[in-house]
Figure (cartoon, one colour):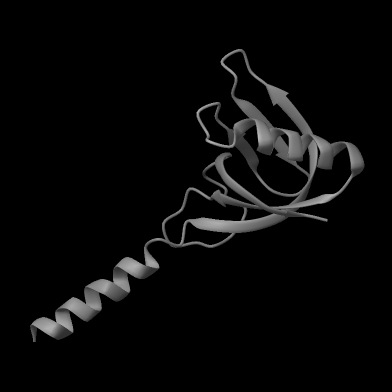
Length: 105
């Protein structure tokens, strides 16, 4: 009985972490705020936030700026603000923190 409950809890915990999503989009614009926070507006999806405390802040900002100027598509990992959804857009949240950039093409 304990094993069955443990397995059910593990399965539930595994589905609750679906908020980290991989999205791909072109970058329309980038704005740097006074506190160093970068706001990135993709073409189709929600606004992305890149905090100055991110370990690869300058590298990611450079990649995004270059992709914006050349019109390339960026594949990135972000938090969509939902617990059970794996969609890149969300009607409730409009600011997603950027975790990593996976590819530019």
